[in-house]
Amino acid sequence: MKKIFTLCAAVLMSGAAAMAQVDNTFSIVDAEGNVIEDGATITVTEIEDDMFFGPVIHSGLSVRNNTSEDAYCRADINITQISEGTSYQTCIGGACIPAVSTVGLHYSEASQAIPANEVMAFADEWMLIKDYNPITGGTVELAPGSMTATFTLKKLTTPEKFDDETHAPGITGPSVTIRFVNENTTQGIDGVSDAEGKQPVAYYSLDGRRLPVAQKGLNIVKYSDGSTRKVVVK
Image (cartoon, rainbow, N blue to C red):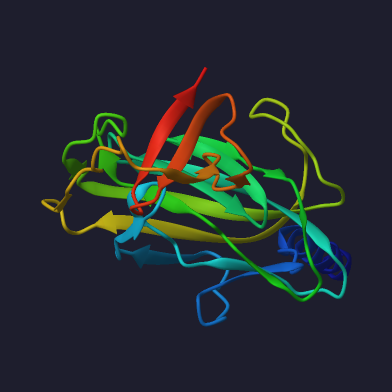
């Protein structure tokens, strides 16, 4: 009887281990290509000046497809803390989450496959501008504080579109917790200069796609002097 009990326990433990196994289709890697261990926590602090969003902090991470076939990746992002007045957005592996500013679980949708044995950037930014009007200009005030979120990659068999209520199931891959920290709480940047009299040279959507002409709604317009401005077309 003891041998039977021991055998059953071993089988159950083996099954539990198999269920807990992380799918290795994808890896999370840093800028040098080093694999971030599943469950690790990293902190990023470097503020960069983005042409579209002003001062931001990027994670600097990417997703690597470890297989010899194209594969669809999405991400479940659990924001546990985010400073008031800031927002975060990402297109992890082409799976986009538009700007969010609230704690909780946010789901991306896989819009494109990551090619076999290729790397695709998180393409993310924690946006630090607080109470800034891009139309009227003025001084950019950077929100102090930090943001913390856990990113869990999911493998999808096909590209899926869904919302927070009806998200597509996926095979669980690696996860990483990222702390975005603004260490310079007093930093300010001069506002965008008045664009009157300057010629527009390019139009972009909010997700950074180049547009042939301005489209209905909110556009990012780049001018001949290098300045940018958000313009609403009705």
